[in-house]
Length: 157
Image 1 (spheres, rainbow, N blue to C red):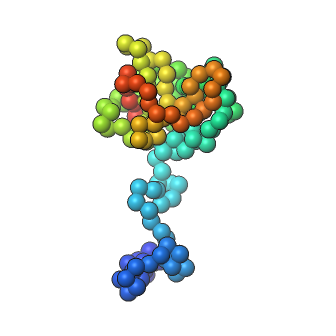
Image 2: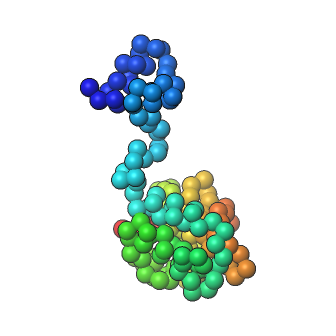
């Protein structure tokens, strides 16, 4: 019997079990919605974590990391670290993604800001209406609420 198989019987006998008690008998604590190990994480969730790790990095036009970024440089860098290749600009990245509706968006999807048919900015969706992005000159990589309805969503293939 594996340690994971012992968890249900431990919980039945005790009524409840703390995470500490489960860990003490060599079991694993499984949290809903969180990958059990790094291999189970998708490239999108890995890219999201990479972008978040760059919090506070200065914006620099044309920069692709690892210390300075522009918007598409941050998404390119983040997905590259997650094993996916993206083109350089926000518009090129939009053209390389599978376009999805707002109702289908998930953490790790790309959020493209547009004016008419022109894409001018990109960030990585973090959930709850927020994105990680490199906003503009004089700013830093940060988490921010999506400020407009003029956005399209794309999923990296």
